[in-house]
Length: 148
Image (cartoon, rainbow, N blue to C red; front, side, top):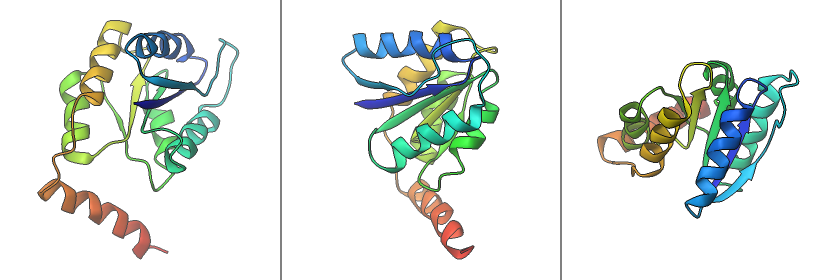
């Protein structure tokens, strides 16, 4: 799977660990930065990740900041992204199964690397259920179009 990762300074260490782990599993990984503890603005990296998803450069995305909240808001500004901020594997699986989430957001200051990997594994290993959930996801897209 083609997976794009992006993080701010608070999330860069976890992002790097996840990128290496995903490569070991055979995924094609695009690391969109940042790559140091130097302070950066999460909206920039969220937008970069969102563009990668919206332009089909990646199948899935993983966004990391201190809490996971700010970068998830930034990613969700892109209408083609459905970013879910999670703390546990069940939430990650349900985000895929029920909401067809294509980006996972994690809070590096809130969960450790092992839990983050469990969340990512659940996210990548779960298919979208469609059916009544598909109808609801379609409504999200229509709401965006109706507001234009």
